[in-house]
Image 1 (cartoon, rainbow, N blue to C red):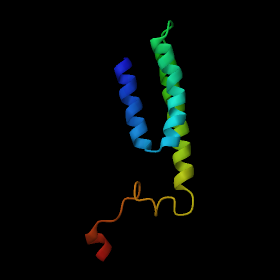
Image 2: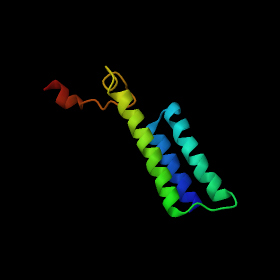
Image 3: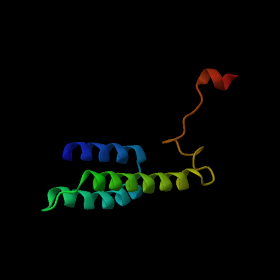
Image 4: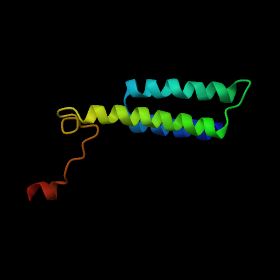
Length: 89
């Protein structure tokens, strides 16, 4: 269970790809880790709620970043260009 949590956490952090967002999510997940590794284990419900909260924070921050002027079009890390064959058309 612990390995799955950290694998999912890693996937979320890679998906978001921003240190500021990763730190906010990391703060949420530190509380989960403390519950898992501490004297009282976190329940599945607590873990799921923590991950949901982390995803909500990350998604909200990502939307704010992308929705700014040129937040998508001038960011090569997230922009998906049209294929060359379509650009010619």
